Length: 245
Length: 241
Ligand code: HEM
Ligand code: FES
Image (cartoon, rainbow over the protein chains, first blue to last red):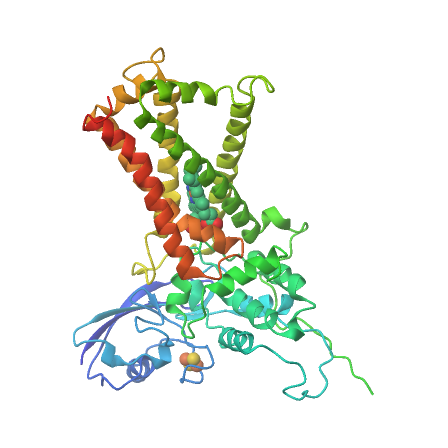
């Protein structure tokens, strides 16, 4: 199929950018979205043009590097997938597709579609860890954990830190990301001693980075490739307000 | 042998740390908690207000006596209007803080996304929430001002300030345009609460049963809307006169 792409091009963080139109021909429906961009880039390179910069690494939905706003939706319209897992069969011949970077002040554009997500690293550094000398791995049954808690903690731990929640949130809030880590650690015995301090420190860092506040719109969960539930944010709020439960 | 691992910063902060910590009321979560608590106060008031309105169906005397009683609850143990004044002060404070929090969060949101998407961001969830809450909230605030001028002070009422409360109600809602304005405003309150009610639970960390809370919010909002609209429409179709 033949497609028209409107892609955000920006030389570097200092320069301003604009949307540029490209045509890609003979796209196979079996290609992933990133492979389709590879095809475009090969042609741009042959023509002596600057290829479109975009982030990617594993290309199998586990690293969280890729992330594009496709037709106004983070990671494209198919649910619970990353951009690298989005296939061209979701589109039809003649489609016009807009491709934009994550838009948030704490995620400055480095080049074209690549943004700097180190703000997330700093939120984790503020409290997304457990300060105990862990030693070697204990026996799996040494500390009993309820099955539901283990499952919920694991679900929260599947967050890959891609940033789609921020990109989709009308407030540019990083609450889902922050809440996922707070839930993951807060549900497990090892996370208890620092539970209240962790929530305070991580929320404070999230605010300092310049993310917006949550108004429970639910846009984040809807686009999250891992389907992190909105309930994690309720848990983050409870921990922040110093309530247990 | 023990070794100590230094936990250094892997990435350089873009924002310099502030001289003063933002504290509870400077944090997004704290501001949101203020909104939830003040919103809950307003909802409780609305529930009482709605129940009181239904007195209209008991006739002019009952309704006017009820209106007079509101001004002297607790008398003679308490001075006249003591309870009413207290309620008024709490309500004004709640609206003020609710508005403050709404403005603070809206400004945060604007700062967090200085560059907009070229292709309009398409809602993958409810979608209407942000507009209904911010602009809808302001609509409600404007309506409350008109409502006070109409039925509390009577200056914007066809029967005027001298008429009895019951006479003012009947005089106003006979006009289709007055009923229309009230309908729009009350429906807006319903939409605000449809999201706001469950959102408040979530904000206060009580939102573990999301589906049930959301269903409950729809029911309570619909109940409030129906209760508030029953009086204007009863007057409009001539059941109450
Ligand atoms: C002064 C006019 C008002 C404005 C500007 C306003 C604005 C807002 C905004 C922006 C939110 C945040 C909602 C969100 O996205 O989660 C909110 C929440 C809420 N509002 Fe209002 N509102 C107003 C009046 C009212 C009134 C009259 C009531 C009560 C009947 C009310 C009850 C609530 C409740 C219960 C919440 C939920 C709190 C939360 O989300 O945690 N609001 N309001
Ligand atoms: S490239 Fe790793 S998740 Fe898409």
